[in-house]
Every structure is written in C-alpha cells, then in structure tokens.
Length: 341
Image 1 (tube, rainbow, N blue to C red):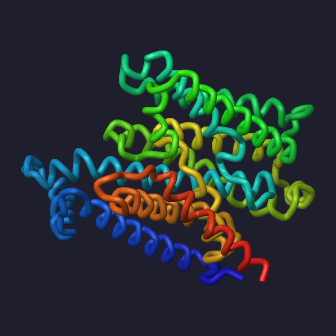
Image 2: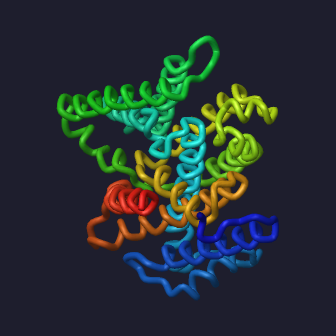
Image 3: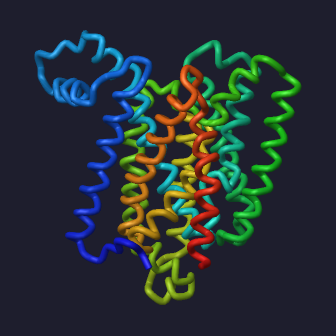
C-alpha cells in the first residue's frame, strides 16, 4: 500500500505543488554551493531580477549563476525527469520492475557513437559532434532492438528485453575495445560516458526543455491506457485500449527520450530504475499520478546526486553516473527487501 496514495484531483494538485516546491528548494541549494559560495537569498534575488527589464546581470554572482550553474542544474532536472518517466514507461510495457531506459542497450549505442566521433577527430572539429553521434548511435540501437523484438507487426516484450540486454552487452564490449585500441583520445571521454552534467550549455537546455514538455505530455495522455495494460494485455483489450498502437508509440517516445538525454549527459544509470519504485511506494500505481511525480522526483534525485558529485571530493569532481550507481544499487536492494517482507 502506498504511503500517500493519491485518489482525487485535489490531492494530485497538492502533490504537484509539494514536489515542485521541493524541486525548487533543491535547485536553489545546488545553485548556492560551489567553488564560489552564494547565499541562497542572493540566488533567489538574482533569479527574481531576471524579470526586471533594467537588470544587466553583470555582477559576479549573476555570471556564475546564469552562465555556469543554472544550465547545469536545469539540465539535471530535465535529464533526471526524462529518465524517470522513460523508466515508468519501460516497466509497464515490459511488465518488468527491473526494466529501465538502459536495459534496451540505448546507452551503449550512444556511448559507441560518442567514441567514434572522438576516434575520428570530429569531436574537436565542431561543437556538438559528440552529442550528435551519440544520438545517432542511440537511434540505431532503438531501430535494431525494435526490429528484433517485433514479429508480424506485434511488439513482443520478452524478446525486446532480451534483445536489449544482448545488444547492450555487445556494445559494451565494443566500447572497451575502442578504449584499448585507440588510446588517449578516447580515454578523455570516459568521464562523459559515466554521466556528466558539467558540460551543460544554455543552448542544450533551451532545446531540451520544449522537447521534454512535448514527449512527457504525449506519455501522460496514455496514462489511463498504461493502467489498463498493467492489468494484462487481454484485460486492456477488453477495456477498449488499442494495446498495439499504445505499446509502439510508447516504446518509440521513451527510447527517443533516452537517446536525446544520453547524447547530452552521458550514461546516467539507476534514475530510471529507482525513482519509479520510490514513487509507486509513495503515491500508488496510478500512472496519472506516477508520470508527473516521477518527473519531479527524478529531477530532485539527479540534481542532488550532481551536487554530491561536485562537493564530496572537492576539488575533484566525480561523474554523476558513478554517484547514482553507488547510491542506487543498495537503495534498490533495500526496496526489494521491503517489498518482499
């Protein structure tokens, strides 16, 4: 039974307000901490001043916040929220609580694409080459796994899951081979492969924000269908849900989210696995509640993980993917033991 199960529209609204407020507080804290400490009150004042037409934004605090920390924090919110929502979708489609965005090998495809761009020297020729190749690699894996997992036009969840695992293992071997054979130029991208928000740019956030708004809205429109599919495909058919169309559209959209996110932030694991479980335990299994709550909680989790990655070994900065893995693995084991007890 969920701790704060949501049954009414009013309760859903309050949940959204509380989670949004929590996310705002976490973002302000993250913006205030760094090599230059900025009081939270000054952070809020600077952010409010952005709406003043006479504000020039040329003081030191404004420069640090707007040019360095703000893009990183906003990217963390969008990436964490996107991965969490994609995790919800894959878990209901595959009817497997262990499914997450990377289980289908998408991150492996993005990693190989990024490494190829570095190996060919394209990453040094123009900005965004690594992200572009990472996205193309992820897209190729999405198409490949979809082809393997489809039979007579029907998406087979068990085959899809196995195909993703096998493709992911194959691509991981290719990544290791590229690192060994090519040498130093490829080793420089390892930090990115482990998940890194430090390269965030305002342009990335401006592009990702409307994209995420659209795809998450598309997924939310299918929330009732997910509730029916969770009861079984036969039940969903009896309830009038076009299961085949919903599954195909959901798979494409969730894979697209993962591919875009990985191309911008690298492979950040466990967010898409842990956050949906936490939200189910807190708010219940209704996907009309799960989808918005996982987006907000995913943003909170990744911003906090990135903050921890920045400060835990100052002045050394850890990859945020390493932090999510170190925290996520034991937390998931604890959740499993709690559910089984």
